[in-house]
Image 1 (spheres, rainbow, N blue to C red):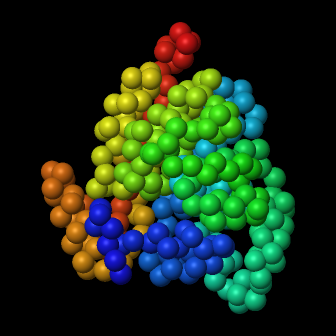
Image 2: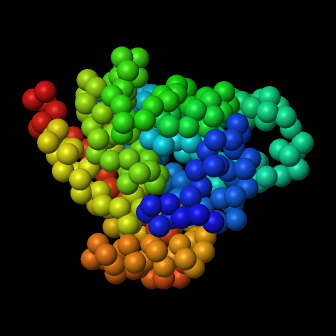
Length: 272
């Protein structure tokens, strides 16, 4: 497997497929599970926002949403193991593209939820599937590292109540985060699970200039198993290069993330 510039195995090819079957087939082998760990934290934040802001149906922007996994977990009240079975089982293998989408739409419609999801990603095929399946309500196909959002994209971003991500910070920087936060008429709350070899400090510093406070949540969250000894060695060396000692989970073979919560200071908001 090829390693990217960060030392991680490159899985970019999985996001260019027209449906998520290859994505789930490959990531199941790596025991990818970060969205499952993130789900209760996102659900708690959504509920807290709903109660504090009296917003019955908050709008969540999922940054780097790919095939809408975070939205599917929340919206369909499912688990990663169930999604793995859903996309790698015999029934899924026998369906064409339209049949797979119809099955997913039926899954979404069988559950009630009170959250609107906007997916943001650089992969058009992944976004198209997530939207067609009903996991996300709106899609923003954009590379905000390289380009300012269009007028239509800014209008969608301005509706964000919360912004979440599971593993894309580091590949995207504070440039993208600011381009999401700045169009909003109100500052959205943020929850980002960031892989340990990346620093959240540049994002937190930039958000602080917009009136945000950031809390680093204690604990370590498994993303997936290392794909090879070479990948593990590269990542552990990258951690040491930043002055961090590898955690026990990392030496045991797990790529790990930490959770950072950034919320606008209440006083700053009232002054806007």
